[in-house]
Length: 126
Length: 126
DNA sequence: CGGTATCCTTGTGGATACTG
DNA sequence: CAGTATCCACAAGGATACCG
Image (cartoon, rainbow over all chains, first blue to last red):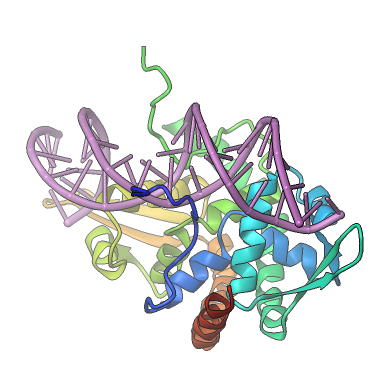
């Protein structure tokens, strides 16, 4: 039997309660915010995302995209051309979410030097 | 020597660049959002937090609080009474962050049934 | 009360080879 | 191009005993 390691990672069960903190954690998971922000401006392809998301592995990009699609935050449009082409866009629900994420990211941009400074000070004293 | 497992977990080095995504990830880490939201209403003690944050372990609560304090988001006030008393409050910078976090949490509250529905649909088709 | 210290399990994520 | 599949490393996190 496949003892434990089905390796689907971040997946949550379908029947479970789907609590607020579950949803928040999903949306705030390591790469999700970056992906949502990157998709927001308009349709974007897999490889473009891969480039834009410096440092992400193929596997994690796929996983993140699947989870967001599964949760109804991303729409995935497949063009059956050759070579294949796939475009991702935000759903309306995700577009509303995006406002808040931008707020978060902007806050981080505004305060990252303060955070760095606080960290230095803290480390000096402890 | 202490080979590798210093077990400081989520810690990031002090000298590092402190990029936006680092800051976002720190703030969006598993328990941080919940803690910040719980602290926001006013001074709160360790044990109160432990109760409020259903499911968190002592270790993770401590770690999360230390990291947030280190990053200058939480103020830690120690009253040297016996038994000891420690209160946590948001710093001004964290108070501004809190606005955005509330937005996120409220969004999650508004849409968790949509997310659950999307998930069910997706799972049915795949 | 407010934490540390220790041990152990699990999840998360990277690298990479392969495929329709 | 847009993914899967596989294997593996290690960081994140839980449980719990202990301490000032």
